[in-house]
Each structure stands twice: as structure tokens, then as C-alpha cells.
Image (tube, rainbow, N blue to C red; front, side, top):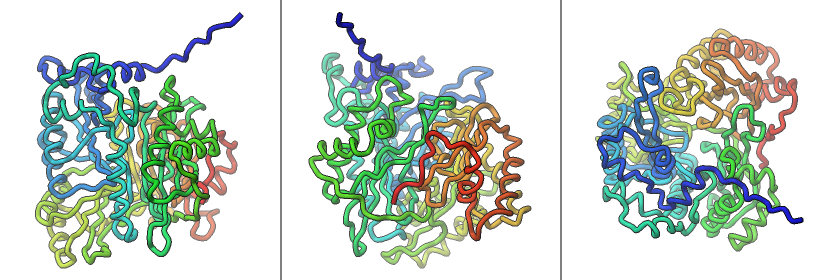
Length: 568
């Protein structure tokens, strides 16, 4: 007797995409209806592909749900010109909450936009030649690349490659242009709408999001191993020889679900520069065809690599790209982070790196960063580059005008010397409450005070010049890449955090869970005990993360998914 095997039940999102592959939903109709205070649950999913999240102010939930929207831009390599920056600054003031938030993927996020202002926000962005398509959703997200001019002569070339690759991997639905640029519903018959097939993604796009990045050793300013797809630049005599391909990285996990875990990307092989697009599309379509469409918590490319292995994956990529990958070439990363302050560029101009705490560009009391940046960017017209550590670079400033720029920022309470502790500069936090619907605990709002307490503790122990890479998130989805930090606080419940230890300076090693649930008020006492031990037992010049890996974590049971340092 032959028993029929039931086909696997696909996730709800798969049905939505299959039923409306244009990704238009009823967005245009809802925009046109002034009585509709919010978008439907289905349109909530479609909006993501347009770079928009529908949220509500969680501080006001006890009274009523106050709906608002977050809009995310898409800047390949984090690059935008002065006019585009000024357009973003204006929109944040007119329609958002008067702040710009630099994301950990080199974009801007606008928070607090109400539905009645959404269309004008999107229209104004497009008029400034700024796109938001695929900044979210089950597609290729923003392609990241090293933004810092002083890292080498190849930076501008790699930024251009990131722009080209971003265009090549962008979804082709005409709905985005129709809704946000033309301002109307896409005029197609239902059958045409239902049968649209994207030439790269197919009818149902990817099982989950897909993240791509470039990095130029020895500076790992992009956290390259946290991406689904990565290209490590390999040079010979300061010229591009090609790229080491890596794949299968990702940060997100779910509490109490051992089948989900953060993972470092595997090094797959070496490719020549001319094969970049073909290999990218090959990796992306492996995810498209083999990713899990039944369980979105298990749908990232990292689980395909984990379960099928590097050899299988390499063969599949080679078959799809029509090339043979060479063995990976040697490389080494020594540190992560940004070059802040003034630096000379290879073209004779200067760039200024400014620390932006948690990426939030705002005016607050005497520290008026948003106003100061607006004035200097309007006057000096620099190129602006956003970094993966949520900082900002002003590029191509004439050397003779540095003092003039310094004085303008000083008038706004901003010092170009970035007079912050090494630990504060190395920190990151996700937005969390009140805007993120996934947040289980506070993050951005408590991180500054948490860092002040850490700085006080370091000073008491004689460690005030020590750099600790500290990251905090309100949930385990990993938006601030906490699982790469030397010290991380990951929200588990209101005012309760998991404590992770053991990342390294080069951001090539995952940390590990040290304590599963620590109250907010107990984080500093826990850290005091660890730092006191560090002070007594550290090796010469040993970093805190390396000490934790060498000593503290060796005392814990081996974690099932404790990924080792990435192979060089």
C-alpha cells in the first residue's frame, strides 16, 4: 500500500508572496483612504519589501495603539551626496521624530512617520534619488562596503562594485515606482498581477532576508562574517586580484530554541573579479531554491550551509555560476571599528569621522549634532558615508577648511576630537523600545547610562583606557550584531538580559552565553566580578574578550553551536 506524502505546509508569508508577486497588496488603496488609520496585516508584510515597517508606539499601548511607520533607505556602501543628506535631514524634521538613525547596514531610518505623511516622505526621497526598495523584506538587503577612504586605494572601486551589485540584485516589481513615484495603484488586470515573476527571485522571492557585504583586510569594519554572502578583497601589489567568497553568516536566533543560532560565514573559495555578479546570483539562488519556506525561524542561508555542508554548497555555486572556484587565498583581519577624527585621503583631501552614539543623529540640550551637521554639509558639500558601526564620515573636505568646519561644529557643542571613552566609541545598541515590535527589553534608551556605569567601573579598577566592545539588543534577532561583541547584553524579558562574553577585536569570533537571565540592575555587579578577575589574571596587553575566551568560557560546558574563529 502506497501512502501519500503530504506536501510540507508553507509559511503564511509564502502564500502572500505567491498570491501577489508584485508585492503591491492593497497599499495604494489604504494610502488613498483617509479613514484608514493603519495598513492590514497582509500589507504589513508587503510594506517591508518597500522599505517600510508599520509599528506602534509601545509607550502608549496602555491608552491605545498609536500607529506609525519606520522608513529605511538603501545606500549601497553607505554613500550619499550632500543634497541627499540634506533631503533626509529635512524629512526627518518635517515628517519623522526629528532624528536620523544610522543603521548597522549603512542606511538611514526615519522613525515616527504617520500614515498621512508616508506618501510625501517616499515621494521626496525618490525626488532626491534615494530608494527604499528592498531595504527590508525577503530579498537582498543593502549591499555593504568599507566606507573609510584611508583603508586603501581600492575603497572607491569597491564602493562602485557594491552599487553595481545592489542594482543587479534588486527586485524588478513595477509596483514600487507606481505606488510611491506615480502615486497610484498599479493598473494591471488581476491575472497579470498574479502571474508576475521576478527574473531573479522568481514568483515567491527568497525564504527570508539576504545580506551581502565587502571587506578589505586588515580592517573588518563591516563585520563581514555576519553576512549571508561576503566578498573579502584580495590584493596583489595593491591591485585587486579577486575575492575570497564567504557564505552562511547570520546573527538572529530565538530564545529557548536550540535549532536557531548565530553563525559565522564559511570561507568557500576564491574568484576572479569578473565573476562577482555571477557568483552572487548563484549564492542567492541557492538560498532561493534550498532555503526553508515552512519555518521562517529556520529560513536563513546559514541553516542551508550548516545542514548541507561547504563542499555541497561550493559545488552548487560552481554549477550555477559556470566557473570553478580556486582555493581561498590568505588574509587576516586585525580589528573592527571606524577611523574617527581627521584623516588625509589619498587624493589630498581630508575626511572627518564622527562618533554618533547608537547611530542617532539628533539635537539634545547643548549637543546639537543634527543642526551642526546640517550647517556644515550645506556649506562644505562633502560626500557623506555611513558606517557599519553607526558612525558618519564627511569625505572630500579641503584640508585648508578643516578649522572652519571644526569651529562650526564646536558652536553646536560637537567636538571633532570625539572626546568619548574607547568603550563608548566601540559600543552599539539597537532601537528596541518604544518603536520595535520585537523588543523584549530596553536597548538604545538605557545603553548610554549603562555605558556611563561601565566607564565608572573601569575607572575604579584602573582600566579607563581599556576598550571593551559592548553591544546591547532588546531581543535575540541580533540587529546590533551582539554575538560578535566582547561583552553583550541581549534582551530576554522586561529588564532582563542574557550576558554574552568572548568576541574578539577583529570580529572574527562568536561570543558565548555566560548568564541566561540577569536583571538590569545586576549587570554592573556581574561585570565588576568579571573585570576584577580580568585585572588579576590577564596576560600582557590581553583584551577582555580574549581573556573571557581563554579563561572564563573554558569553565562553561561547550555550546552546541559555539563557532570557532573564522578561518584565515
